[in-house]
Length: 432
Image (cartoon, rainbow, N blue to C red; front, side, top):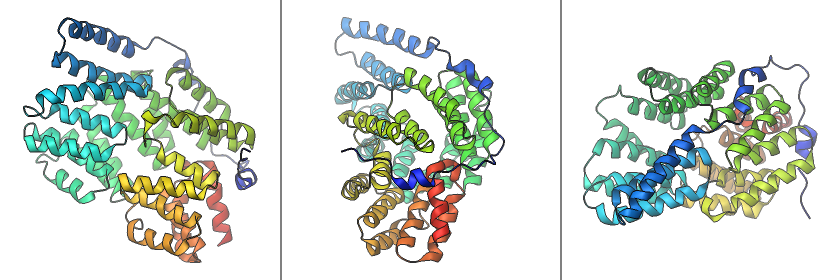
């Protein structure tokens, strides 16, 4: 028998009649919800056909194979088709058999694909191989930082960052921003560094870099509760590239989490599902259903999300969301512990340990949860969901003062956490 949405969510999810003025306006982005030919995909496909013919005429041509692998990786960003990443991997591995002793470029490409698939330990092996070769050390060091951050190795990340001689480059600034945000917990400093990075590339005629950085700025502004600036970033990105789907998703979240305009948020998501087939949108729709007390629709969207992510090609890419579903919504204590243990084994970050601590708590091992939180999470992870878990763990352990500190810290990120968790925080604070 399917489980219904937890009564806590149905009962506690209330929206105040006194809403802040809306940030989003349907007229601003309606034009981007009209299906239009994706010129990026068309260009990628044209190039893909060219290099495919090259490979047919010259079997074993590693240049053609490398080009095809790169195009498949680019295509995935617009199609959301996970098979394209795996096809790219296969091609890169074939190429690497031939050139693994002559150049580090293929190792970096393989590492990039591993990061996309959340295969971070394998990415580290590829980067170590690239470092051993020694060529293009600057590019490899940049990726050394990226992988170290994903694995929670803040010391190696800092060492890689400090080894970069020029502290004013775009490449340095965006990584320094990530370090400030995720390791130091200094969001304002991270935003300042990202703004400096944007100044470096704002006149660049290539839209890809502009869109990537501006969207990231939009996300950071949202995390800092600078909603209007976040919205304007997303609109500027769409003006450059109407098919930059992350920007549309950002607007959908603003419409839902800030404006409480579920109808418009659903319109955006419906369009995104047509254009970009990934499981993420079912999860977003489930939260919207929960906000409207529609337990049947909620469970349908959750079931679709879980079914989609069972595709083995996704690997551990959706563990974060599957963990939250099992721990907080399906109340499946053994399953959430299994997911947390898997994540910590493959990616021992403070955030992953926050899941493990919460899983212990959900399994009734409160003292073990608090000890894990103390050793691996507290003052090491500043993600809103981790702060929320810390608050709930200390509340369960009767340490009300600590619980209140962490829950209030999480409450500052109510927009990022979404209305359902935000109301859970309010109720938890009332109970302290």
